[in-house]
Image (cartoon, rainbow, N blue to C red):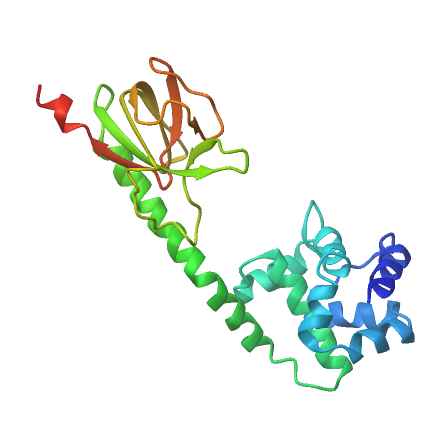
Length: 245
């Protein structure tokens, strides 16, 4: 398996593609013409999932770097974008999957491949939309001078030290553990955005932390210092104990 991958990378990584493929059929035809009979036979003989996975970081990477990324003819990129393919990793996987099916005289079923990619990405895209809405709402809810509490998950690292962090999509829900996780109390000294409310930040002057020996997003932060917080998936509450004083 690895011999084939390494040999393909050496033989084809510098291949000159004068006319970039503009659609799936031309992409398949490129490999039909440039691969040797041995390479095609070895690829054809593997189970489909194994064949595509094995080449993801060799041939697949070559496809992404030479046909998709960068300042180049965008016809192939536009072709897959119009189909609704979510990512460039999916583009290379669809090309390799379709090539494997062609070599095995099987239907390509392009629409089913695209639908499967969309279904796989749906939880992530739904989560990201939810995070954008929550971030914008948090940004609008608070103003400079407000006293707030920030709740953060603490990841205990292999050396025993803790790092307060947030989660990324699609896994963002967690239950606060007062015995382990962090509560930061502070006052908003500045708020700002990049482009929109869904990409927004608070600068918070730290007044109190329940875990003084825990880093915040890998930074060592002390009482009285100002820390910059992205509001994406940050749990923020009004510090009512101070607000009512």
